[in-house]
Length: 573
Image: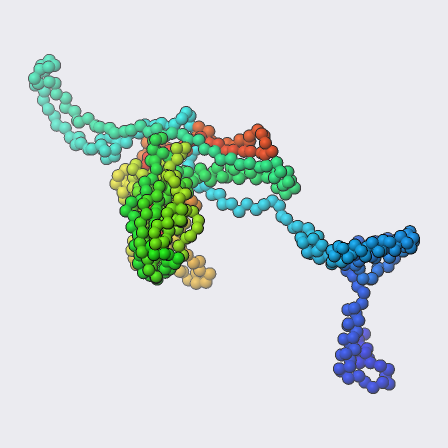
């Protein structure tokens, strides 16, 4: 059935004059207003069940929204009125009115911020806590771990014999000729017995003794933290897991960049940089002029040893600056340094190390001070001694590959070549092959440096590199390229290029996992020897806390440093 027309719904008797459209609209608005103002309430399933259980209909009376309103409505219920005398009811009502004046919260609405600031609401807290904690340990996962005993690991090396061209042993010609012995006089005579034999060969070798060191980190969970966390997360389990991963991550960094002290037979502390100079020049495109500088800028630097420390400070160098200038810091870095750390202060006179703050790190021998100079942070006064080497430590891969026993170490102090991309590593391959017939397996780089090497292909002026998009790739083309292998132009072997997550920018190593010598007695060039591998200890409870520690006792060995190398000083473009 069709709905009646609006004139019929809102009009008068059929005999009355027809309403205008404005009058019909006005009467419709009045109807909607009356509907909106009709008593109403939001019902839940419990309200309906309760109403039917009590044998009554749904009440649409206005419900109280404050504590005072709820108490007042309760006092007016028939059951309460019947049970109290008029005097008692009046006394309660009067007391409630007095309390209303003294406690304003009684007349507040119940909202998400009232009567308490946090609201009478539940917390939608998801358990457990999310672990946004990167923990890659590629070296620890790859390097073989072997059993050690005692206080150090020893082995002997034959580094060369006549004909190998290694170990400093020279070559001798093996040719011989027939000879006739005519004098067989007894020993001691003027013409002794002659043997027609070739010359004796020579040998070179050395002993190696690598000390073991002890390592440990600890954690603590108070009783209150453990018991208060029940129902949300096992805090002791979190502590133990974090302790284990922390130990593994710290060992990973030691395997890469640790340094032991010279007293224990390791490379020892890094020297401070030499030849520090600071020069002011006008900022060029891409640079921001120094701001916040006084009449002079004062600079000290240290040799960077990676995540664990740095050398002692140099003496200060200073330069006067003008508006629009940047300051170029330049040094000569010692062997083994992964770069330099720069500390800067400013003023008409040198304010001293307490006011000289860390300005940044560079993986090369130069650093450009630009923008606002730091006025807070890590002060140079905190560098009170060398922290590049540790008595309880060993030499990691970077120090070994840049040290005196390495097969190749080059500091570029420049970006990768775009004329001949990868030539820096080809030079390393040539040197390793010439010296020991090395044939390395992989290159470890910082992520930014691998990108730079990949980008060098795209901007290369050489015609030896070309990217081709085939017809089926005209849509949905993948953008980007990455170098994952460098072909050793000496041996023809593909050398894997990998990113190490903790490699300092500016440094890279070229590693051999095995030797190209079948009977070398070296199954793995790099090995970890542990008297005790990583273990966890739960200490007896001696206070209101659960305490745990990790412990391991060992060292890193490189049997053949000369089959490895390093390319450092890679400038970040």
